[in-house]
Length: 355
Image (cartoon, rainbow, N blue to C red; front, side, top):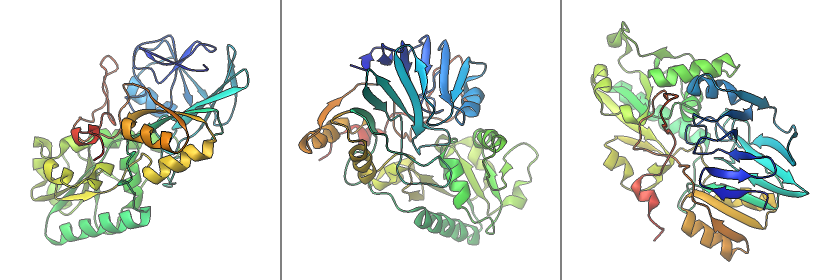
C-alpha cells in the first residue's frame, strides 16, 4: 500500500512521512492550517505556500517548507504534490505516487467555489482518502448569492430594531467568506480578536477583505450600535458579548441544516454555510477521481461508506483524530505548546448514524 494507517496518523513508508499526523512525528505533510490537521510538535512541516502564513501564525516558530500547487517533489521513493481543496485559503489535497500507484488524501474540502479559497480540483488516483463530515443526503448547501441575501437581510432587520447582529463563525475561512458577502452599506463590521488576527495574516498575503474594526478596549461601542459583529461560536452568550447591549445572535454552519441545532445553541438565526462538501459535492468529487478504493475518515463514516459500497466502490473507514465542523469547541489563538482544535469533532447529533 502507498499509505498506511498508523497510531500517529496516515503514513507513507516510501517517503517516511505522515499526512496531517495527530501525534508528533519527524516529517509532516499538511493539508491546511486548521488545528486538527496542522498540530504543534512535528520535526518538519511541508505545506502550500498559501497555507504557510496562517500555520506560522498559529504554530509559531516551526521548520516549514512550502510547495506551489501542482509542483512535484520527490521525497524518498515517493512523488508528492499539492492540489487545491477549496476548503480555506491554502488548503490542499495531497497526491502521493509510488511506483506508478497514486493515492490522494483530501484533507477537508468543498467543491463549490467561494471566491476566497483556491477552487477544488479533482485529482485522478487509484485510492482516495476522503472526509465525509456532511455525508448524508439531507446536506445541500445554498449558493453564495442566497447566503448573502439571507445574512444581509437579517442584519438590516436587526439594525432597524436597534440591535447589534452577532454572527458565530470560525476565524479561518468562514469568517472571511462571510466578510465578502456582507453589504458594508448597512453599517460597520466589527470582529473578535481571533478573527481580526487571522484577517491580518490573510491580508498580508494579498487576500482582499472588506474593512473591519477590531473589538478592543477604547472602541466606542455606542457609536457601533447596529453593527455586524463576527465572533467565534464560543463567544456567543459569553461575558464578552454583553458589551454590545441588545443583540440578535446567529450561527453560520452546515449543522444548521439539522432541525433543532440552532435552538439548542440558543441562537436567534441559523445560516446553512460550511467549508466542507455537501452530499452532492462529496459524491461528485469522489467520482471525478476515478478511484476504485475510497477510505472515509471523519463525519458520517458508517452510512457514507455503506453508500459508496452500494455504488461499486471498495470502501473502508479509517479512524482518525480529524474533525469536521464543531459548534461546541472554542476557537482561540492556539498555544503552540497545547493541542487545540478549531474545526474539529461534529456535535453529538452528527455522530449518530442516519435514520
